Image (cartoon, rainbow over all chains, first blue to last red; front, side):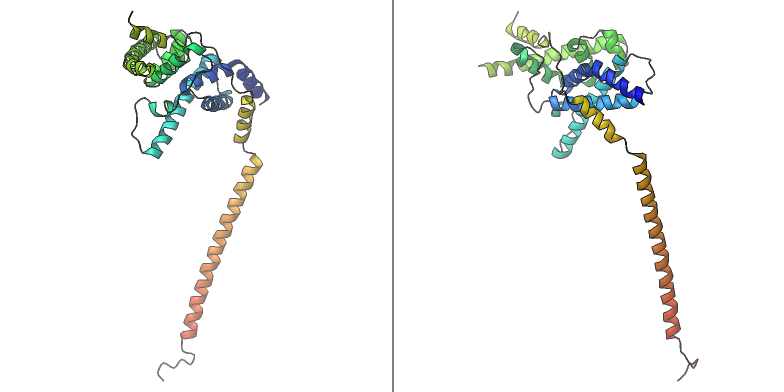
Length: 183
Length: 90
């Protein structure tokens, strides 16, 4: 029991930034990211004794964070749908793009573009979104992303490629809107 | 390069150099509190279970008593309505 407490403390000190920032990239909301981080570490605490060391603590915690973030978005969207009787979306776009968000870790002059990017990332399917966030924003290598997503390296490459081309298409459509706002 | 393509490129590269943000300092305390709240005291669990059992037993005994008394009432009513003199024709 004491061992678990010490380990949780150690894991929190080592990975709290990782968990919080990944969650923030998914939900783009400070309060929700903290809620996800809480749930992740509670889950880590409960599963710590059963952790089988097949993957590293980092990969394991990344996986829990990604799953917890995706579940959180689904839960929020289903709550919203319940109240507005709306129809189900493929890519959980509703809740995430309800309000604007300026990421505190992004340089001031890039904040506007980053907001557009995050809004567009939210329209991607889950696998493409996860692969893009972990690979292009978190800067992980494809083998690392593959281990977290429990898939092959070639599948990750394909997800990232499709995510990038989809983002380019969607941004091309958004460009006219951007120009209108600039005028 | 067209302005549209420049803009798309700048949007795609806007997260380059992103810095990690620290969570609220009270986050770990909240986590520990959540873990503590989730753990129910075994004594409380046994106390709740025992209370439920007592309630169920009390309900069963109350139902049995009620059934018995209604049976008794029925018998009493029948005995009262029967002729006391054994004379069927007046």
